[in-house]
Image (cartoon, rainbow, N blue to C red; front, top):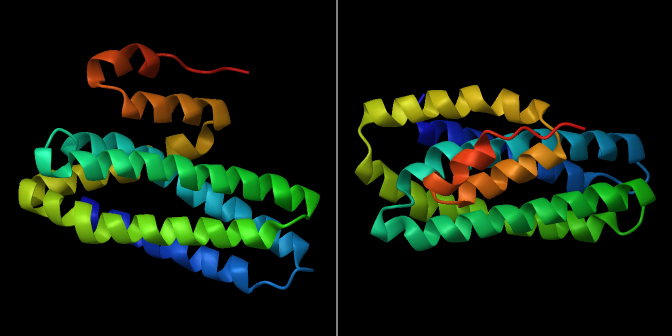
Length: 176
């Protein structure tokens, strides 16, 4: 599978999960908690794998640099909304407004990727390269899903750093 197909497939899953979450009545607490967990379990692995495999492959290209850095920033913003949503849901306070902000930020980000970043990458990579990236992306997600919050935070930081600075951080594994 080409990296673009894998990314867009995940985007559609996330959009569907967010639509389902926001369609819930306020008293559907258990279903809401389950959907929030599903969003987390799709979003975090997608983001870390996308950063490591896709963003880091194109961030040195002049026409993509600003878009990629903006993508990293949007990942941080989206994950902040997700963490807030998880906390607010546990308190059952104001979850809907936060979910709406998450959906809005996510929609903006996905649109940017699909209409601005992916077209640049499609001009850069051969189908063989895009296929290899797609395989690496899909293969990486289960490992990310199994790691905890702190490890995912370290991975986000490593993904943003230049490769020579990221290597020591990538060799570190957070243990509780």
